[in-house]
Length: 266
Image (tube, rainbow, N blue to C red):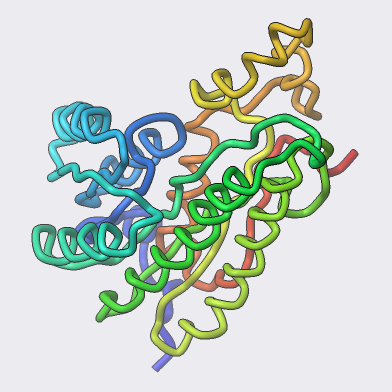
């Protein structure tokens, strides 16, 4: 039978009441903003991050602000056993695993490809690609009643950029992973979607940009050169993730939504 969402009211389509979610890299930035928005919509959330104290702090803050059950756990996205533990924690403690957000990742390190060390390339691909793959796989295995997997890609998943070649490779891979897993998981009633942020002003990005600032680059000016005249915020992306995780997007899978204030349009 076709699920006729047209018969549901708008508030119900947005609601995540009764759903359990895991947000990887949830301690800060886009991850923390996503935890807050999902909880505001009614989800109970596992904040999973390698920064255990940061994850715990975010969980306490969001639980206090929303009244939802928000718990934290240490997660190394490159360690499959750690990924399995986070998925099972959500299923067992929150009554089910319905939403998995693959947000954990390594920011690009600016530098020429000729100087890139193999160890750095291996680690970046291990976290950004294999980690996302493992997260999606282990989540789908535990989504007994269907669900949604949201992968964090990037505008660099659609175009190249100098000095961050390994990062570009990883985000192209996330775009391909999103489409491929959507084909496989669709029959399980699991949607797989992605978000490709443009320039987002988060503490992690500011830290990564520190060497460029020291070299004299006006980072704020560069990040604000979008069609809307400003860099994005973590919550700009969290709201897109909330839309994709909700039944408002029930007929969207295998797509990566670009949220970049028109950066790719120019």
